[in-house]
Amino acid sequence: MIAIEAIMNQVLQNCNIADSQHAGLYSICGLALRLRDLYKWENGLDPWVEKDSAEVLEWIGAKEQKWEELAEKGFNAITIMGNKYDPFDTSGIDAFQEFTHTRHWDLVIKATAEGFNTARYHAEAISDIFQKGMQKNDKQWIENEIAMRLLRPLGVT
Image (tube, rainbow, N blue to C red; front, side, top):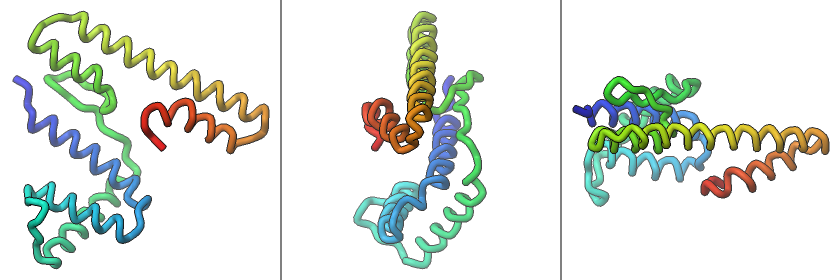
């Protein structure tokens, strides 16, 4: 039996780690609005429900304390029925979930190969871009190429 709540808690822990590393990217106002929405989501509140400011500020203080503790941590693997997955290995996780219903090993093997090939492609591309950029002595070119060739196709700007 797959323990959905355990998986959810692992994913939420990785969300907290990501939040701790990127919260400073927003303006104070933008962060405050996002935190208010996160507070409502984590507490199962409807969007129009407004809680007492003191209660929300106490929650924000606790959230910031947790972020400080997590800021230097890497993401945790997601463990499903004793199998560990990279948190970004959605193909592997989806294949395992489908395997639990169909028992077709080829799904897991294919997803693992696709994930490995994707990681290898990105590593080789970054290495190639870096080497060419260093030959040009142009670090800005390196950043622009990585953004254009690798990040933009993934929807990352």
